[in-house]
Image 1 (cartoon, protein in one colour):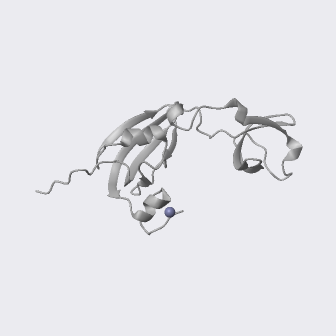
Image 2 (cartoon, rainbow, N blue to C red; image 1 turned 180 degrees about the horizontal axis):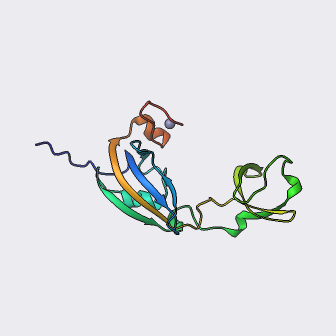
Image 3 (spheres, rainbow, N blue to C red; image 1 turned 30 degrees about the vertical axis):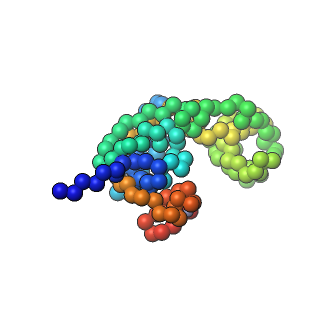
Length: 166
Ligand code: ZN
């Protein structure tokens, strides 16, 4: 009989997970590809803090339902990250619709902005993460656990099975 102790999710392990993510309203937002678990480097902040914490110590084959509050997910909605822009500032050919995400050059650097509202000539843009303010519900199963390579450790993320994914 071979017993491998210490094969649990902890810092320095590359962990493969199957997951389904639903928002507070129970709508599915995202899920892992069938037969292709998402791999991440545990302890490196690659996944939201609330989920990372909940997976700590789990073993291959274990399943868990994890509820993550906004503070440990994508943060609370910050009203100061919303601003009004005149429609004339947008390119003529750009569709101005609620929900459209576009990249803007701000003084802080390139930022993804989402169109939050359109009223007449005024467009409200939002720099909050699309899932800010959401309570997240993950159905997770641990598919694999392995030691991170030195390269992965130094990069702070997991690499794909074919060597590199960036
Ligand atoms: Zn890398």
